[in-house]
Image 1 (spheres, one colour):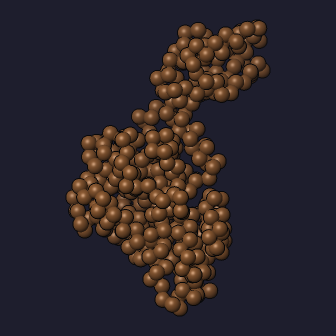
Image 2 (tube, helix red, strand yellow):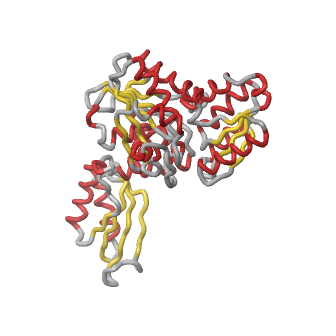
Image 3 (cartoon, helix red, strand yellow):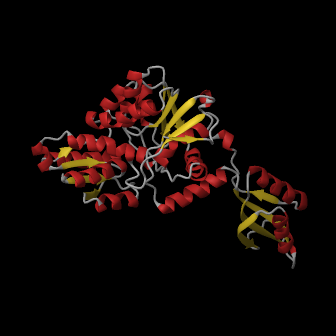
Length: 385
């Protein structure tokens, strides 16, 4: 368990063994479910539906245990996760627009082929495997005050909360979901699992439109608080994990950090807190976009448009403002035809990178002091996330 010094409380991030599989959390439940199969079931093989992490856990351990594995992955599954399952020898089928559709395909396959269907989150053996994380947390940090856990289908929080509440009932259990798929939060409001609409999210591993019946019944009374985080908070959390913790984390794993950064868990300040960071499986292109988005949210990457006179030397004068403040200009576009001012003016759009939000505000002030027309792009306030 790694201690984080970048948090106001005593934060402990549970980092997965990324060198091996980057889904330590998911593989615990998958391996336990495979080990519980009968000899006949092992021979028949297993099938599962997963957006990636459970699929990788089954594929990896199925290969090591000699058990045939077939995984049905929805169209939203990242290419890297699909390829890793293939690398581990699994039979991979990409079908269904979301987890609900992929699950129906996997269930149909199980009925027709005789393969054992292993639900990614609503299987008691999978939940038991996830519960070992709770035991490990208490073994390494007996005086933990709170544990912040990502929620997709609910199996992870069901396993961890059951283990922790049995041994240390006063520990706060906090569940976190993305606003793009708040299925557990909605289930708690309605008192039962319900189907909710989903949208594409950085936390693709949590995009489960309906939580499991067993996982919901096991976890709902053990959760002390639910938090729903915005996509911007997830992007900022991915950036924070890279910069402060030196760890590449996918969106589904970063939501626990996002809950802290969004200011929704100020009650944890000064307490011993464990953030469950449950995966590092993120496509390179998505990681790049998330990092840039995170920098924009943090006020260090911004777009600014300035209207200057259309004469030689004016753009050089504009560049001098950036140079004097040591702000890095990443992209500059000269927009003569698009300028709304008179024909003797030109709009210059600049994407630039600063050291901090305060540094960006200094640049904005300098530009507004020198030029009459300064237009800012999106410059969000992280305190509103």
